[in-house]
Structures are given as C-alpha cells and as structure tokens.
Image (tube, rainbow, N blue to C red; front, top):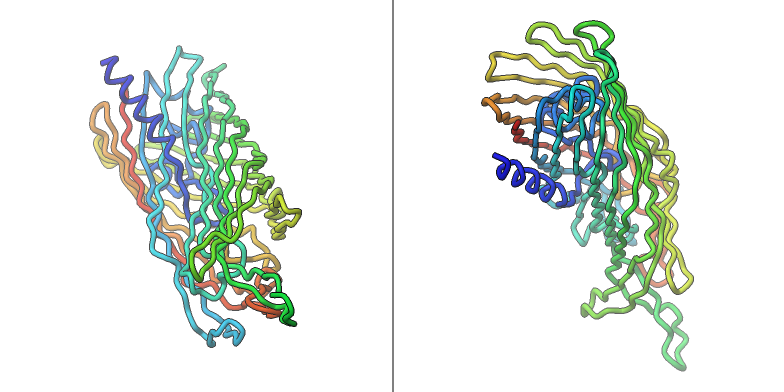
Length: 433
C-alpha cells in the first residue's frame, strides 16, 4: 500500500509540472478541479476535496488520512473577427477570420495528509494563469504585437499547512513557487537601408517577429473557513500577486520571403500577475449543498506590456486594466451514496477597457453555464465537469490597431471580435488512503 501511495504522489506531482495555456477572460484560470467546474467555481466555503489547496487551503483540515487527486480540464475555444474593411490591408467590409481550432489542457494535482486532529498538510501544483490564442497568418490584425500566436504558460507549486484551533475555525497558508513563460508572435514591417546612389528611403520587408521569455518567482496564499452554525459555512482565501522579472528574453525576426533570420537580440520585461481574493457562503442540509461566491481580481496591476531590447529600442503596449469581480452560484445534490450531481453558473466581468482592447485578450463580460457529477467508488472518486462559456462581443478601434504595414504606410485596423465561446471538459480522479 505504501508503494502505491508513493507512486500516486509522484504521478500527481509529475502531472502537475506539465504547464498549461488557456483562452480566458483576462488570463486567470479557475478550472482547477472537475468538482469546481461542475459547480461554477462556487467552492471556497466548502473546500472539501484535495483541490482546496488552490481554492481555500484551510479546507484540508476536513480531509481524513492521505488523499491524492489528479486531473485536467480541456478547453476548446472559438472566436472570430469581422473587419470594417481596410484598403491598406487589402481587406473588405465584413471579411472574417477565425482563431485556429485548438484544445488547451490545464492539468492539476494535489496531495493532502492529516497529521492529527488539529494539523493537516498538502502539496499542490496548478496553472493559475494562462493564455493561448492562434490566428491565421493572413488575418487583418497580424501586425499588432502578439497577434498571430500568443501563449502564456504558468505552473505553480504550493506546499500548505492548515490548523484547526476549534471545531468551528480552520486556517491555512503557504508559499507558492511559480514558473512563467511567454511567447508572442506577429508580423512586422522592418525598414532596410537604402542602396547606394538611389533616392529610395522607404525600402523594407515584412517579417515574422517572435519574442520569448521565462522566469521563476514566488508568492503566498492563505485561507479561512468558519462554521457559523451547523450547516452554514463561510470561506475566504487570498493569493498574492507575483512579479516576474524576465531578464533572459529573446527576440527573433524571420523573413517571410525566404525564411532567413533577419536579426536576433536579447530583451527584458517585467510582468505582474494579479492578486485574487475569494469569498463564499455555503449551506448544507440533507443531500443538498448550495454555495454563493465572489472573486475579486486586482487586474489594475497589469498596466502595460513592455519589452526593452538590447539595441536600445522598446515595445510598450498600454493595458491599464481595472479590478473586477466574478460572481458564482453552485449546487450539489447527493442522489445516492454512489452519485452526486452538480450545476452552477457564473458571471465574469471583463477587466479590459475599450481604449486598450487588443487581439491578445479581446474578452468581454462572460457567462458560464456549468454541470457535472461525481462517482463515489469506495476509496476512489471520479469527478466530471462541463462548462459552456459565452463571451460578449467587443469592438476594436483604438491606438493598439495603429500599425505600419509597408513603406510609409500607417493604418488602423478596426472591426469587431464576436462569436466567442468555449467548451470546457474536466475530469479528476481522487484516491483516499
């Protein structure tokens, strides 16, 4: 049995170290367990599974023995862009492009252990933030930074400890170490020196621009679980911001005409991932569990996307996002000792103002409709969850669309991002020793 436990722990940690990228509002990822997915993320005040390490670490005091949970959420997004038409780009009114079909995996894994009636410990790995979007190479917005392909990957490793000083109170906290990787791809017009004895000063070529960087840094989290009265529980948790200093970046420019490397140089940047605060109130009676929750995200810390290059030039894309709330309601009903069924809904405010909206994250307010079920098979539980997320359309007409597309040719790309939605399928396997 101990050998099986060690294998499960190693498997959980190894699976969690697979980084993830996902299409999202902002790029906060909340889909960290199949049970939470099925309940619309309204689990902060319940926190009664190993994924409590992410949602509310105080909750692991409720878990007996040693428990291991591994799983993943698979995200299948779609979105299109409808152009206003632009002669400089050779596009017509209402011409459309669609993002490439991709399935983005979000792995998760958790291990918890009850030391005694007062103390529990745990270790989790999860992808708290991520972004993945890929457009066709000929789409109209391809000259805006990061707009042919963008991938932001994070992996967080979080050891936690939780205490239960009384029957009605639990507290938990711990650090987390976070790996961050970013890749931005787009097309760009690059000027070339004029040939000798010729008056042409507007020579140039179109290139593929690719910028990459990565970093390890750390933050911390804490949680609180209070049993107000029997059947009524309040939960709160906080994850700090993480400031990544990307000093080892690289930018490469490749000719579209012949694939030759035009230039390569180093770059540096600072990227701050926001703090989050979660609140929840849960009610349990009979076979029912109901929860209402809210999450505040400090997106105002994301002021710009700036990169400084070794040749003294820089890229500075203003963001000026604002803090937002997400509202969640979830329910679970125990049909029998073998089966739980779940449903939920959430409303997610967009942090992105009209003045800085761009194709990297063109999200509007979102609504998610959720469902799922759990199979209780003795020491093993299988959880399945599904989300359908509908994103409000957004109009793009601001300076982020001002691009240089040829010799002395500056134009603005405008249009509407629309028909944005995503299907999310999630599964977790939990074993109790």
